[in-house]
Structures are given as C-alpha cells and as structure tokens.
Amino acid sequence: MTTDTVDHILAQWETARPDLDCHPMGITGRISRTARLLSPELTRVFTGFELSALDFDTLATLRRSESPLTPTQLYQTLMLSSGAMSTRIDQLVKRGLLVRQASGEDRRSNTVALTSEGKALTDSAVEAHVGNLHRIVSVLNTDEQDQLAGLMRKLLAGLEAGDHS
Image 1 (cartoon, helix red, strand yellow):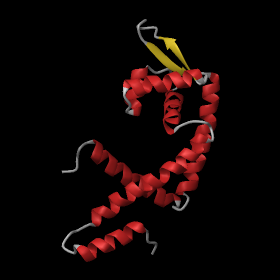
Image 2 (cartoon, rainbow, N blue to C red):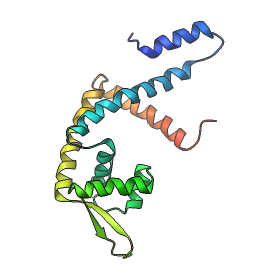
Image 3 (cartoon, rainbow, N blue to C red):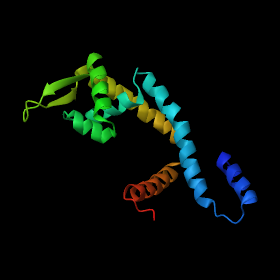
Image 4 (cartoon, rainbow, N blue to C red):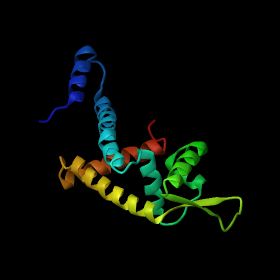
C-alpha cells in the first residue's frame, strides 16, 4: 500500500489523541497538500507562455466563452474584485492579447475580446496545460481518474451548496 505524509500525520494523531476520529483530516489534508504541490506544476507551464495563472484564467475564460464578455462577467467568473480585473485587462490589452470593444447595448459599457494573437497564445497555452494535466494525473488509471473526479465533484457541490452541517 502506498503511503504519504498525511498517513504519518494521522498516525501521530492516533497516538496523541486516540479518542478523536481524525479520518476527515486525511481527506482535507490531502486536498490541501495536493493543491500546494499542483500550483507550481501549473505555474511552470503558464510562465512558459509569459502568463500568470490569473492571466491564463482570464484568457481561457474568454476563449471558452467564444464571445466577448464584460469586465463584470469576467471578474464574477474569476472571483476577483473589479479593480483587480480592470488592472489585469489593461495589462493584457497592452500586450496585444485583448481588445476592449464598445458595447452595442450600452455605450457606457464595454466588452473584452481576444485578439487573434491572444487567441493563438491561449490555444497554445491550453494545449500545453492539458498535456501537463495528463502528465500529473497519469499516476491514476482512467477508472481511478473518473472515480476521483466524481468524488471531488460530490464534495465540491456539497461545499458550494453549504451542505456540510
């Protein structure tokens, strides 16, 4: 059986506090540790395209929407403040990856769209990102990947719904 650092922590708690059921610690501890270890693995790919994770998320959101979005739609999707989103958009516009367009419905509003250069860079970055994700999850076979995705979906849906009483 494969063991990890969380197994060691759980064994310590079993010795220190055998009266506590620390089983959920194994789940949340592994999720937290996995997230910390994943971040640099993902960032490595993004920096190869001179993008931050937030740049990538912004460009990928626009690419998959296949239509221009308002800055409000972007910051709500990416869970950012409007000021942070505006700064990010400005930087990507300066790099020639995005363009601001006047909204046809409200002249005071604008939408943001990928330029052709932005679309090409995003497509290349997404292809590298997906390849990297395949590499990362390759320690699991396809059935295990599906099972883990299903369990994570169930946990996340419960958390998002506030269903953890």
